Image (cartoon, rainbow, N blue to C red):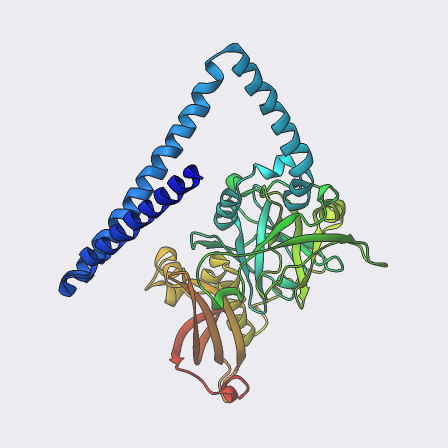
Length: 423
């Protein structure tokens, strides 16, 4: 009985002391009232800082203990090795294997850097710009750019714009219209731009894929757009020349012809079509299989003859500018015109022209050497597109059996109305 009385008295004593200390603490905190905000902030910071420091010290001590403990004895060292192997086996085989296969496509791709893949895409995917359509493309060889056929359909001289803003015109185009594939050949060699590829049959279900292309074409300046999704399946449509990779990626106009790559940046397909978040990409295996069938038979050709008439000569002149066949265009300048220019000066006027569209080229009534012309240009200025519209007349002269440009009266038209294109 005495024991319980002593214990009860001890608890009461301690409780009285605790409540007294607590009351004293709050008196010090609350009074005087004008110092309460300062005390509250100071006390709060003190206790928070004290807790952080103590926690940090305990964590450091714990890690130091973990590092030192295996080396205190051979038994500790053996236990560390044993349990480390057990944990590693369990972690990588039971917990992570299925996740890695589903999420990354395997251990090899798990260690690939998505940041590095994004960097490669941004510096290597190109724009493909024509007068009727715009899209994207990527290098499959030193001087060969792959894209969709519908991107260059009806366009004899599309332009390839590199990520640094420079552009060039392919000297040759081949393709397979039914497979919607085209190959553009350029004079320059770009070995650093070439994409490696893997067979899509190696893809795992739900593996992440990345589609790259210039969304909305030249109407949006800046870097290539990157869209991420997951691999769903490989489709084999009946009566189709190609197999398609299906993924839940939304492609936007302008991205056609760009590459579809895996986590490591290897091409598995070509951006082709998208409907409501479901996209189809031509399998790279199909591209390799159909490559020998590519021809230039269905590629639009430049067919002009400046010897037929003055209006055909004017049309040929602007067509050569469009195709950037500058020597051919320069050769259509008359002897009189050449007295006031040379090739270098003349070509410097047109360095930024991506495209030329001719709306009218016809003889002026009552004159057999003067042509009325209306045309527009698409110019690449500071990595953005500018449209300009012109109208006027070209006086021609027949030299060596060819009508050549003698004298022009061309003026720019600001913001023409819709009927200007059809008058």
